Image (cartoon, rainbow, N blue to C red):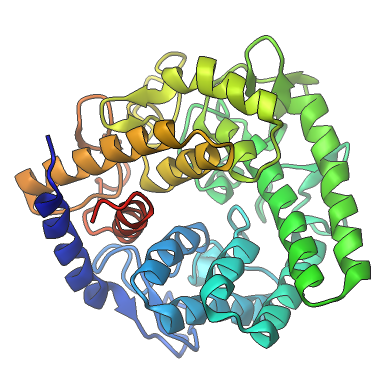
Length: 393
């Protein structure tokens, strides 16, 4: 049984650790692109001076709760700076990542910051860049990096048109989910995130009293939603799946990506109830939510597979459950995750990038890649977010 004092020990560590991972790198130097504002890197060694795209959304969730609003705002501004300079928000601020983005979270970050800053002029500036990112990168059919490939839905891609590069753009580097053929799939998380991007733009332009743009993005979102429902919802398996557009069939591989429609409020109430009742138990373990099903995995260890669970994906599932009123399920999973984090912190004195949620240990990794990292910014941020969300601090 974990008591609140142990949460407090972790929160004290996190508060101290922010100082180690706040970076200021204003000029291009060696591998790294210069950014005008301070930002948070995942940790202070292997990822020093890196600002990752999707990491930053989850980090910002914790920064806002830690009352580091100007830091969070600056991180969003950094992404706008990179887009204005390069026409892409790269997966991180390194030269060799300029051909690849990551799952788009710019609007989610902006609205998180806006919820406390209430700065309409800033929101207008960010949403303009978000529109351009959507139009010129994700929805642009003239680029070499073709994302829209089937019935208006999108895939991950990269500058060199390789399956491996596309999987890196997904952030799931690496996973059995795509069977080493990521370019062949319309991923449920990407298309759901683009749906949320469009609904966020609609909501933001409503706040900004630009009703024509608000209506336009609402219509675009509804159009995307209809295709997602048609191609990616499975009535028999009660879940959302990736769609292999080459084979014209759904994948049957269970991954936590199928919870993104709950996070984005795309799923119907009936679908959410079916997922909660029949599918959530497939993923839920003693330490929280595993990233995938436990079977049908590659022979080599892939870090985004079972038995690993990742902090940001815990939040996607928890927020999705909260969106549909499944508060007790959300709180139970939060307690499991926080309890495991606290247990391993007691044993190691550290928080970690990912965890084995089955054995409640540090996450598994492939020795040919990098070892599981300590630190760790999005782990810390989600810990802060969850303890605040459920009154556990």
